[in-house]
Image (tube, rainbow, N blue to C red; front, side):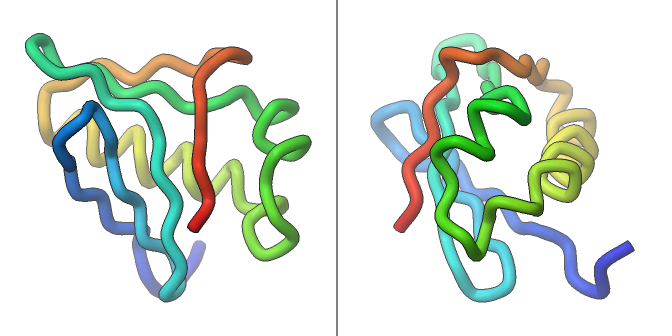
Length: 85
């Protein structure tokens, strides 16, 4: 368990800004009927920079908790996109 949780903030253009340990990345968040999409662990590990590569489980756990609190579905998909800032 990590001392700090990842924070999530919806942003226009169907994006969810995620802040983890002072760094940010963006995942897909459909609007209209809100729905978050997280890349599969394999896709994450292929695309993520070194600072994020080993944190998929942490991201998934915190994002699932946040989505439940928002009454929003979360899907894990190979084709979901993520952008690291």
